[in-house]
Length: 442
Ligand SMILES: Cc1ncc(COP(=O)(O)O)c(C=O)c1O
Image (cartoon, rainbow, N blue to C red):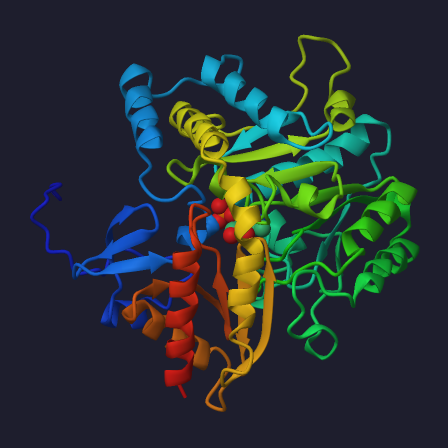
């Protein structure tokens, strides 16, 4: 019989790592063993500047004491309480705080545990919303090429990253895709929102003409497409999507899993870009990633459509055991306090011009074919090397880590999204290391 013991040698073999080249990684692992504020500590004792806020999620910096305290206190006081036909005070407090922070009437919050679950939740709510209003034929979902909406079947169906889709069968039926908005020819080295590309939103009219609006439930897009390599929405593009959705009674969902909680310089991308969606999916910065959690924000009319029928009836047959987990709510409330008390979103906004100048100062460095930025996020696209796409990017990523900077990589695009507690010194350091690193890689 197998016995649990701490004496088993740690040979790295058992953990099947997500979104990782397992064999390559395990031959030369990169292990993180500690974190504080803007830095990780590596297993060999080095300090590495966190240029990606973990996975775009540790917006208030690492191991912040108020969040640590809140989690510890909650774990000792009440570890878990069901939220199916029961409740606990922090779930309601957290939801109310979030509703207050959100723009417009996005004032009802459904909790989940990950961005992927939030996306599935929002897509299900969209379909059920139309049915509740007597438009049950509206089941079609529209995503976008190069979109990333997590890894559930819903998310990969509306998502548009081929490797995330191609080996998983037919996916959800009744999905169509807008074209992505990236064109090196028309927008390379744009600062902030590109001037070119708003017309790509008109493709939604073509899709409506093909399927008929009466079959379409929702359009889902990331305000800024993050995981595909930081694609900034063209000026006027999101506004156009909003107008076309309104015209045809289609719900607009913003997937703000990355954009939410300060990344673009406001609490949400919806605010930065001045477009109010019908629903917003969030996760990551929601709890500063200290406890897994996600939240779907819905506008009043969406919520109200469900609040009819007999009062003893469950209005939405959906939820997760860990929806509004007590530890997540405690961490989330402490996170919102930090965001407010330290003016963390304001810091992001104030530093974004400096960030923009710093990242664009790399223009002209060898192999860089595009630089994109908004708020405190940036994508630096390198030309692919003759030996294969992604290889140059990977070499830069590994070398930057050795040089003391952690960043993210998609193909040959490096993505930067450090914790929003950064200062000008950190920005200088990030781009000094990157410049030196990119120059040193073939
Ligand atoms: C826009 C977007 N949606 C959804 C997800 C999925 O989130 P998770 O990995 O928590 O499931 C991500 C993750 O990066 C994301 O960027």
